[in-house]
Image (cartoon, rainbow, N blue to C red; front, side):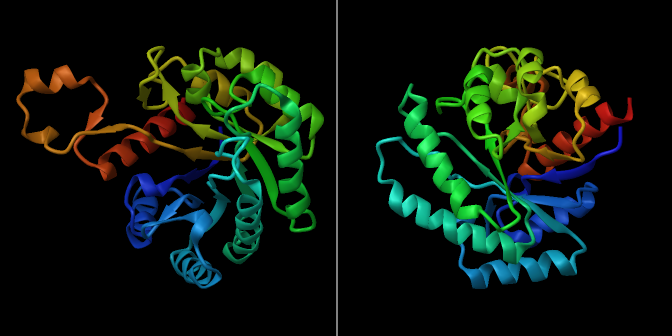
Length: 270
């Protein structure tokens, strides 16, 4: 299996310089940018986008996708400013060299009609930009289970899918079943695994069927999204105390980030 690795490097560090260092140390060439220097990617200025682009270029790295929060609001919330922010993000994505924007399908509704109306507004705003919009399955939004995601993609085939195994597990959705329904729409994957109780663990250590999914995945890029438990002071605990925290607990964000990347690499090498 040959893939290019992307990552939410804000899980390694807040500062962009430290994120880029963590990426290079772990052999990750692409950044799914979400939080940078204390700002959400949806809130940065064009000037900040140019600064980020220069730093990534100088480091020999690239921005793969905007890990944006768009669509992660209530369906009854004021949509106009949200859409205006999205339009600015499309412009910043162009500056950053990102070809994708991750988004969601809103909280607080069981009706697909208002969801499609707002998603269509995103699609229209991005038209002609060359940027691929990708819907992520997420707990609590309209498109949480695979069947709901399928409804969205059938209605809006130009909207691609980000497949997140852990999010499906946390919704009680089997990932193989979800994959069978959504495979044709998947643009890329978030590599995140979870146990049945919802706790996130390194890839291949949970119920997400990561080895199976990667064998069937036909995309080029995988985004590592660690979401692993960090316990500051972990190293100071005695053995029994450590074991009570669980197997997958890490002393700092950098170590957790490296563990997540290495777990994915272990599956790829099989």
